[in-house]
Length: 331
Image 1 (cartoon, rainbow, N blue to C red):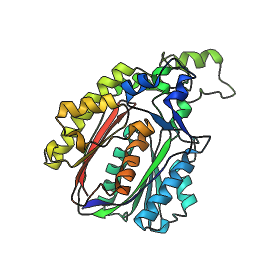
Image 2: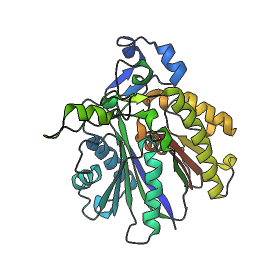
Image 3: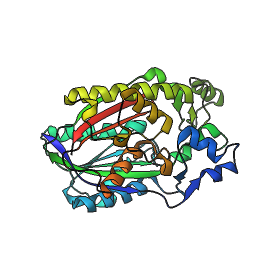
Image 4: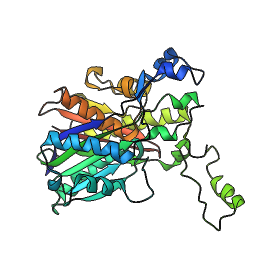
């Protein structure tokens, strides 16, 4: 038993921020940003809920798939920027959609979240336990974690959401997932410190010293080290997923990488000897939207008619953790 993608959707906030806008707040330039990241502009949320962006992408995906919310069995929501400690984002969207026959699961697998969710969807479908139609939503308000005095990170990120409806099909997806927790201090953002009635300020400071580079609720990233991890893990996981699928990397028709940085993507392409025409890149217009990058790419490609039945597709990503994964399937 395998999976089939029935429809995709996406939502991007209407406000866009260009490189020229950043020139007014930090010491940078359009040329500097494009050369180092490949990004020209990004969409930025204006206080929208993470779940509401995901809901809009989900409605579009369901409409394109011609699937009623009542026909959904499972909603998987991926995000690292949830609106609440509780309830879960999947349950909020399940209720707003009226998907009364579905249950929900949230996963926080950073920028690799959609790859993990697609693998999870197949496993639930394979279990033959009543799950046939799965809605995957990846929605991120990542800019609320950004320190806009740090030019090395603030120019990288945007907000948005992508969604995909998956059902039973004949094409098995082959995934290779992994993590290296020794890199967890290279990229992180704290939740607000605990402030219960009995907490002592000194105790809070001592506990949070375990991650000494932390910037409060703002993102900390060791860029050079993350770059090294990203390249090695994306190359490794893509190769391993192809091995599981019993195909060569050259046989892939479309590769959709996480859109973190064009230099990372270009290095991966070079190391694998890939045909660049097979690698979809949209980072110029959206920046890094964390787990929403890959489903937004899928939605764009489907809307252009660029994904044909029989195409062999690989999705590959990495994120804070350090977490990584690739999944290969045939449309």
